[in-house]
Picture (cartoon, rainbow, N blue to C red):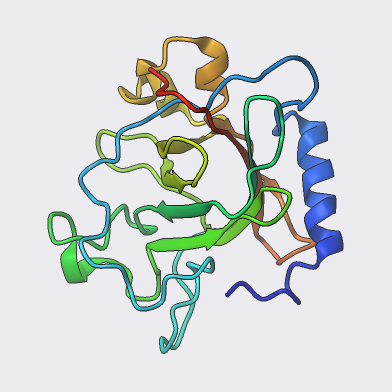
Length: 218
Protein backbone atom coordinates (compact mmCIF):
# COMPACT_ATOMS: atom_id res chain seq x y z
CA UNK A 1 0.00 0.00 0.00
CA UNK A 2 1.01 3.63 -0.38
CA UNK A 3 3.62 4.52 2.21
CA UNK A 4 1.87 6.52 4.96
CA UNK A 5 5.21 8.04 5.94
CA UNK A 6 5.48 9.55 2.45
CA UNK A 7 2.09 11.24 2.69
CA UNK A 8 1.07 12.04 6.26
CA UNK A 9 -2.48 12.84 7.30
CA UNK A 10 -1.34 16.45 7.71
CA UNK A 11 0.00 16.38 4.17
CA UNK A 12 -3.23 14.93 2.84
CA UNK A 13 -5.25 17.72 4.46
CA UNK A 14 -2.76 20.33 3.22
CA UNK A 15 -3.08 19.02 -0.33
CA UNK A 16 -6.86 19.17 -0.16
CA UNK A 17 -6.81 22.74 1.10
CA UNK A 18 -4.26 23.87 -1.48
CA UNK A 19 -6.09 22.27 -4.37
CA UNK A 20 -9.45 23.59 -3.20
CA UNK A 21 -8.05 27.09 -3.17
CA UNK A 22 -6.87 26.59 -6.74
CA UNK A 23 -10.39 25.61 -7.89
CA UNK A 24 -9.53 21.92 -8.24
CA UNK A 25 -12.21 20.82 -5.77
CA UNK A 26 -15.90 21.48 -6.46
CA UNK A 27 -17.63 23.23 -3.56
CA UNK A 28 -19.71 21.11 -1.23
CA UNK A 29 -21.97 24.02 -0.39
CA UNK A 30 -25.36 24.64 -1.94
CA UNK A 31 -28.26 22.46 -2.95
CA UNK A 32 -27.15 19.37 -4.79
CA UNK A 33 -24.18 18.78 -7.07
CA UNK A 34 -23.58 17.64 -10.62
CA UNK A 35 -23.13 13.90 -10.85
CA UNK A 36 -19.86 12.77 -12.32
CA UNK A 37 -20.57 11.92 -15.98
CA UNK A 38 -20.26 8.38 -17.22
CA UNK A 39 -17.47 7.66 -19.70
CA UNK A 40 -16.48 4.65 -21.78
CA UNK A 41 -14.53 1.86 -20.08
CA UNK A 42 -12.44 1.54 -23.23
CA UNK A 43 -10.85 -1.63 -24.57
CA UNK A 44 -7.95 -1.90 -22.11
CA UNK A 45 -9.46 -2.76 -18.72
CA UNK A 46 -7.14 -5.52 -17.43
CA UNK A 47 -8.00 -9.01 -18.59
CA UNK A 48 -6.25 -10.35 -15.51
CA UNK A 49 -5.69 -8.17 -12.47
CA UNK A 50 -2.02 -7.84 -11.52
CA UNK A 51 -0.80 -9.62 -8.38
CA UNK A 52 0.25 -6.22 -7.09
CA UNK A 53 -2.93 -4.12 -7.36
CA UNK A 54 -2.59 -1.64 -4.51
CA UNK A 55 -2.84 2.16 -4.70
CA UNK A 56 0.87 2.76 -5.48
CA UNK A 57 1.20 2.19 -9.24
CA UNK A 58 4.73 3.61 -9.40
CA UNK A 59 6.33 0.73 -7.52
CA UNK A 60 5.60 -2.90 -8.45
CA UNK A 61 6.34 -5.56 -5.84
CA UNK A 62 9.45 -7.53 -6.78
CA UNK A 63 10.62 -5.05 -9.43
CA UNK A 64 13.99 -3.28 -9.02
CA UNK A 65 13.01 0.26 -10.02
CA UNK A 66 10.16 2.77 -10.21
CA UNK A 67 7.92 3.39 -13.20
CA UNK A 68 8.98 5.78 -15.92
CA UNK A 69 7.09 9.07 -15.97
CA UNK A 70 6.25 12.02 -13.77
CA UNK A 71 4.94 10.94 -10.37
CA UNK A 72 1.39 12.07 -9.60
CA UNK A 73 -0.18 11.98 -6.13
CA UNK A 74 -3.87 11.75 -6.93
CA UNK A 75 -6.21 12.64 -4.09
CA UNK A 76 -9.98 12.47 -4.21
CA UNK A 77 -13.27 12.14 -2.44
CA UNK A 78 -16.50 10.31 -3.25
CA UNK A 79 -19.76 11.96 -2.19
CA UNK A 80 -23.43 11.88 -3.05
CA UNK A 81 -25.20 14.80 -4.74
CA UNK A 82 -25.56 16.61 -1.40
CA UNK A 83 -21.88 16.44 -0.50
CA UNK A 84 -22.26 13.57 1.96
CA UNK A 85 -19.26 11.20 1.94
CA UNK A 86 -19.62 7.69 0.55
CA UNK A 87 -17.31 5.41 2.57
CA UNK A 88 -16.29 1.79 1.86
CA UNK A 89 -16.49 2.33 -1.89
CA UNK A 90 -14.15 0.43 -4.23
CA UNK A 91 -12.12 2.72 -6.50
CA UNK A 92 -10.20 1.21 -9.42
CA UNK A 93 -7.96 3.14 -11.79
CA UNK A 94 -6.05 2.07 -14.89
CA UNK A 95 -4.00 3.97 -17.45
CA UNK A 96 -1.26 3.67 -20.04
CA UNK A 97 2.43 3.89 -19.14
CA UNK A 98 4.71 6.85 -19.90
CA UNK A 99 5.09 5.66 -23.50
CA UNK A 100 1.33 5.44 -24.09
CA UNK A 101 1.10 1.65 -23.76
CA UNK A 102 -1.38 -0.36 -21.70
CA UNK A 103 -0.70 -3.67 -20.00
CA UNK A 104 -3.12 -5.46 -22.32
CA UNK A 105 -2.66 -7.96 -25.14
CA UNK A 106 -4.68 -5.76 -27.52
CA UNK A 107 -2.20 -2.93 -27.00
CA UNK A 108 1.42 -3.37 -25.89
CA UNK A 109 1.22 -6.75 -24.19
CA UNK A 110 4.66 -7.39 -22.69
CA UNK A 111 5.95 -4.16 -24.26
CA UNK A 112 4.50 -1.92 -21.54
CA UNK A 113 6.74 -0.60 -18.75
CA UNK A 114 7.20 -3.58 -16.38
CA UNK A 115 7.88 -1.20 -13.50
CA UNK A 116 4.49 0.46 -13.90
CA UNK A 117 1.57 -1.34 -12.26
CA UNK A 118 -0.94 0.07 -14.75
CA UNK A 119 -3.90 -0.73 -12.46
CA UNK A 120 -4.66 0.08 -8.83
CA UNK A 121 -7.51 -0.13 -6.38
CA UNK A 122 -8.49 0.84 -2.86
CA UNK A 123 -11.53 1.46 -0.62
CA UNK A 124 -12.64 4.95 0.37
CA UNK A 125 -12.28 5.98 4.01
CA UNK A 126 -14.96 7.22 6.39
CA UNK A 127 -14.87 10.65 4.76
CA UNK A 128 -15.13 9.17 1.26
CA UNK A 129 -11.46 9.95 0.63
CA UNK A 130 -9.05 8.05 -1.59
CA UNK A 131 -5.52 8.52 -2.89
CA UNK A 132 -3.24 6.95 -5.47
CA UNK A 133 0.42 7.34 -6.32
CA UNK A 134 0.68 6.98 -10.07
CA UNK A 135 2.15 8.86 -13.04
CA UNK A 136 0.91 11.87 -14.92
CA UNK A 137 -1.23 10.50 -17.79
CA UNK A 138 0.20 11.00 -21.26
CA UNK A 139 -1.17 11.58 -24.74
CA UNK A 140 -1.36 8.70 -27.19
CA UNK A 141 -2.74 8.71 -30.76
CA UNK A 142 -6.41 9.62 -30.76
CA UNK A 143 -6.73 10.49 -27.05
CA UNK A 144 -5.87 13.32 -24.73
CA UNK A 145 -4.18 12.31 -21.44
CA UNK A 146 -6.63 10.58 -19.09
CA UNK A 147 -7.00 8.08 -16.27
CA UNK A 148 -9.84 5.54 -16.22
CA UNK A 149 -11.92 5.16 -13.04
CA UNK A 150 -14.39 2.50 -11.96
CA UNK A 151 -16.36 3.18 -8.77
CA UNK A 152 -18.36 0.45 -7.04
CA UNK A 153 -20.60 1.17 -4.06
CA UNK A 154 -23.24 -0.83 -2.21
CA UNK A 155 -25.67 2.07 -2.04
CA UNK A 156 -25.20 3.83 -5.40
CA UNK A 157 -25.04 2.98 -9.07
CA UNK A 158 -21.65 1.78 -10.27
CA UNK A 159 -19.80 4.45 -12.22
CA UNK A 160 -17.16 4.19 -14.93
CA UNK A 161 -15.59 7.48 -15.93
CA UNK A 162 -12.33 9.17 -16.95
CA UNK A 163 -10.28 11.97 -15.42
CA UNK A 164 -8.55 14.53 -17.64
CA UNK A 165 -5.71 17.02 -17.12
CA UNK A 166 -6.40 20.76 -17.12
CA UNK A 167 -4.56 22.76 -19.75
CA UNK A 168 -4.04 19.94 -22.25
CA UNK A 169 -4.61 21.32 -25.79
CA UNK A 170 -5.98 17.95 -26.97
CA UNK A 171 -8.88 18.27 -24.50
CA UNK A 172 -10.60 20.56 -27.00
CA UNK A 173 -10.83 17.83 -29.62
CA UNK A 174 -11.02 14.63 -27.58
CA UNK A 175 -14.12 12.80 -28.82
CA UNK A 176 -15.03 11.19 -25.49
CA UNK A 177 -14.52 14.23 -23.31
CA UNK A 178 -16.57 16.38 -25.68
CA UNK A 179 -19.48 13.95 -25.68
CA UNK A 180 -20.27 15.51 -22.30
CA UNK A 181 -22.35 18.44 -23.55
CA UNK A 182 -23.01 20.20 -20.26
CA UNK A 183 -19.99 22.49 -19.71
CA UNK A 184 -20.21 22.17 -15.92
CA UNK A 185 -20.32 18.38 -16.07
CA UNK A 186 -17.44 18.33 -18.56
CA UNK A 187 -15.41 20.64 -16.32
CA UNK A 188 -15.93 18.27 -13.38
CA UNK A 189 -13.80 15.66 -15.19
CA UNK A 190 -10.85 18.02 -15.73
CA UNK A 191 -8.31 18.30 -12.90
CA UNK A 192 -5.51 20.86 -12.45
CA UNK A 193 -2.16 19.30 -11.53
CA UNK A 194 0.05 21.28 -9.16
CA UNK A 195 3.61 20.93 -7.92
CA UNK A 196 3.81 18.56 -4.94
CA UNK A 197 7.42 18.84 -3.81
CA UNK A 198 6.21 18.74 -0.20
CA UNK A 199 5.27 15.10 -0.75
CA UNK A 200 7.94 13.98 -3.20
CA UNK A 201 10.59 15.94 -5.07
CA UNK A 202 9.50 16.69 -8.64
CA UNK A 203 6.03 15.17 -8.19
CA UNK A 204 2.61 16.56 -9.05
CA UNK A 205 -0.69 16.43 -7.15
CA UNK A 206 -4.32 16.59 -8.22
CA UNK A 207 -7.73 16.26 -6.62
CA UNK A 208 -10.63 14.48 -8.34
CA UNK A 209 -14.07 14.80 -6.72
CA UNK A 210 -16.50 12.03 -7.72
CA UNK A 211 -20.23 12.53 -7.20
CA UNK A 212 -22.43 9.41 -7.28
CA UNK A 213 -26.16 9.19 -7.93
CA UNK A 214 -28.89 6.61 -7.40
CA UNK A 215 -30.02 6.71 -11.04
CA UNK A 216 -28.12 6.40 -14.33
CA UNK A 217 -26.56 9.62 -15.62
CA UNK A 218 -26.68 10.31 -19.35
